[in-house]
Each structure stands twice: as C-alpha cells, then as structure tokens.
Image (cartoon, rainbow, N blue to C red; front, side, top):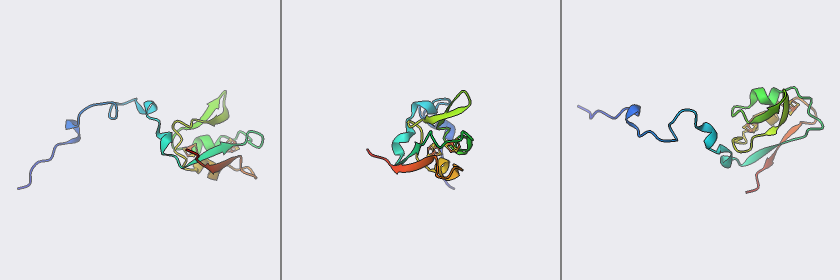
Amino acid sequence: MSEAKPGWKSLPENDALAPGTADKFHTGGWRSEKPIWNEKTCIQCMICWIACPDVSVTVKDGKMTGFDYDHCKGCGICAFECPTKPKSIVMETEKK
Ligand code: SF4
Ligand code: SF4
C-alpha cells in the first residue's frame, strides 16, 4: 500500500501563496526582451492591452501610456498583435 502524500493545504502559508500579493513580485526580471512603444504611430486601438496576458500595458483615461516593466515578462504578444504598419510596438533585447 502506498504512503499517503500531503495535500496542498498542508503547504506553509506565506507571501508566495497568499491571495492578492501578485503585485509585490516583480516578474519583469525574467524578461529577455522588452516592448518599446512608439507613441507617434500608435492609433490607440487598445488591442495590445486586450492581448497582454500580464495586464502590463498601462492605461490612463482610456488611452495607452506605455508598459509596466515591473510585471511585463516580454512575451511579445502585444508587438505581434499591434495592427499598425510599421508596428507601434517593437521588441528589443533587454539590457541587464
Ligand atoms: S511583452 Fe507580453 S507581457 Fe509585456 S506588455 Fe507585451 S504582451 Fe504584455
Ligand atoms: S496595439 Fe499598437 S496601435 Fe493599438 S494601442 Fe497598442 S501600440 Fe497602439
């Protein structure tokens, strides 16, 4: 008979598990590329904001204002989805 394994509720509670703490963890440090925004060619369609899986496109008064680089992981989806030609978001290698 196999030994019973502990369930997830037996894990110690700390910041990494507490709900509502995601903002404290600067996951942008994982990034190898970063999105660069061209405000001049941006048509404010907000597709990048919809597409970003990390809610890292910043917005004020309904308009894009840039990126939250503390949490952007550099996946490039925003740049891929940006519809302008040339793109209003390009990915550039992160300088660390
Ligand atoms: S690179 Fe990825 S995580 Fe960063 S803003 Fe664009 S879609 Fe969001
Ligand atoms: S997807 Fe491109 S054009 Fe649309 S808001 Fe974002 S940067 Fe601007």
